[in-house]
Image 1 (cartoon, rainbow, N blue to C red):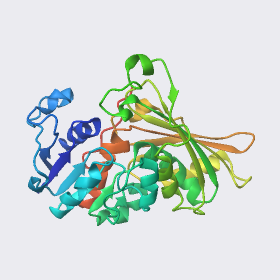
Image 2 (image 1 turned 120 degrees about the vertical axis):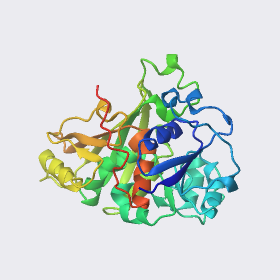
Image 3 (image 1 turned 90 degrees about the vertical axis):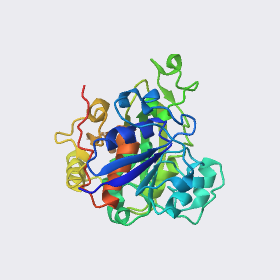
Length: 342
């Protein structure tokens, strides 16, 4: 079985570590390069103790010396855009995990990320397989979705595409790993333990990402409001999706059946058969998105709940899912691990 060479750029963070963890079990992959400028020459286990048995060290090669079939760019926003064109020039296909290439309109990126885009003519495919699988197959540059948008969009697609709602309010709770590996005041244990903290209440940069993708469906004018919360868990995002139905002859069981049918052929989206409420613990460590808890109150407010692991389906696992599609592998290769419950 032939293998492809993979380079992971910026592997010192949580998403880089997850890429290594998942790819070591992928039968079609050889990890050829794992980079970190700051940790050059160190064993991966110096930052990722779960990877202690791997014969891999961080390196810091010149961009021109990175020879790989696919490059996973796990660099911060603003940094990735500077280097992605060079990886492409080297002949690699690139999966970028930053926000630098997620928007079709560069001015939206510049407004919400507060920086000028250095390569506005470089266009990427938004790497959510459930909506762009055919485009992903032939893409040379994939913009891996953000973690919050992944759970939010998947919880919304069926009702938006079927024009059942025109306004969605998203309330998301995220584990602390979503803030990255570098500690700060918000992730300091006494700050986040025994506490729930809303942040970026009306201006989170993932809001326009969710809006753009959902407006490609339905009427194209769906309104989206989004507020994230930091909760004292390590992994996971649970999103509660609130909306008002435009039709008064639709029941919660009708919506549940719609979701079951919509996602019936999706390998990593599981609509819970008995409409149970998704649990973070059920998807921990896995590439699955669970959807359930679909309810309708006496004022016709519809509630849909989704759960993902922010580091896997919300980042590294989805990136590997995109790689599988790009190279014609089985889409589930290396990603079949079930959630770590309890």
